[in-house]
Length: 177
Length: 463
Image (cartoon, rainbow over all chains, first blue to last red; front, side, top):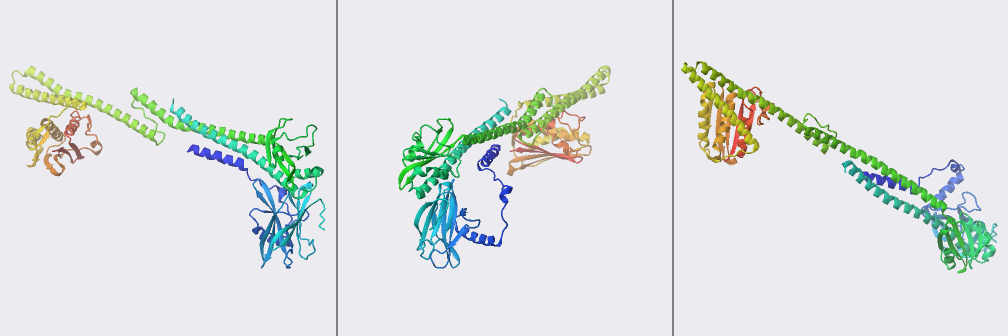
């Protein structure tokens, strides 16, 4: 019975060593702006979308954007109702995957209709420009590979599916036209 | 080997084996965990870089944009990053291109990537002999391999960390072994301490010191052994005491008739010639005192025979009623002299027993003698005999109205040498002998008594 306790102790110590103790947040990390009315609203919408995303997914903010720009709205199908795109990051083992999910609103309910894979380290730009001037917006996603440059994907919505229109590389300044 | 050594030895062996197995398992696991994770994260980085290249930069020439690409690939990574072209020549290196052989095909991972698979290689840096881990991933342009990206990391820190954890694990293991050894010593000490006490006491008892007592430490098996030993010692002390009492009382008993005999012989010598009446009286007394001595010696002899198991009974058919009447007749003069009523009630239907008649007679005489000895005048002794056919036995009861036996003495009266009153006459053997004779007949002797009211002795004899 004594041996059993000792074995248990060793396992516990081993688990602690392997798992590591949770380190509390440092003081500097707790600094953040106070909650504003707008941010509260955003938070509300945010939560709604987060529920539709996989568990533990992390929203990604574009580098050319500011805090709270993690959800971008635009009308892709020309029905006058805005669609929304959310870029998120999923941790898989030691790696992570970037994904962009397109949401459509029907009867005030948001529904995920399509998802595309992303590249690189992060998101540089996300927007709904109307590049071919057909009245409905396209989805532009700019992925970043740090100093190596960025890659721009343009998607068009057709029958609730995103279709890749073009793919190109760009450096620091994005010229959509 | 002592019990302590054996206990502690087996404890320590078991824990050493357990700790050893666990340590080996944990250290191997930690090592695998670290190396595998380092490799995985390099591979992820390489894969991410290569797929970005394939998606967006594949149209331009690799060598031309290699400097810019390197910056991007090295972003977020502390590893050394290299870009190698399809011929295996080093184009870019994040820690600077060293002079010398630019061909990288000597590395296994490089060759694997040029053939289109991700490659990993672990070994020593040819220049510095440092342990390194390299991961290569092919760069494709429209399904054609145009080169590869290679991530190289030093394993010095990884190995040091693994070593550090191993040292912690080994120290914990040693600490556990030390704790168990101390605990084992303590635990075995609690056991061997009691055993040592017992041995010491047993040694002293062997030397004849029965006044020694074992100190009882715990309520365990050894504790009850200590109790048993203490009880044994006190029994031995008590029987020693009984033996001494017996010797002194027997000496006294023997001396009384001898004194009387000697006194009478002197009296008769001096004045027995002419006084015939005195002579007769003296001879009567000499005879009765001689009988008393004889009786006492017979008792002692019987006892020693019984004690050695040398006594044998010679069973034969016994008519109980005549035997009891005979005994009653034999003792009635004495009863009459003491003014005690002696009554015998024997049932008519008593079966014939298979028993040793002389020994049974001895038992009855002994019991009635006892009753006479401890009854005052105007007392009454009732002897009854009846059969109990359903239990296949005969019950003989000797009941008196004597002084009785105190409750605390009752349990000892059947023991040899025991006398409730040390100054009473007799050897203290009578009841003990009677009990043993009945026992030899497969019977049973029970005594019930109440001080001041009288004693009842019941004898159960099987038919």
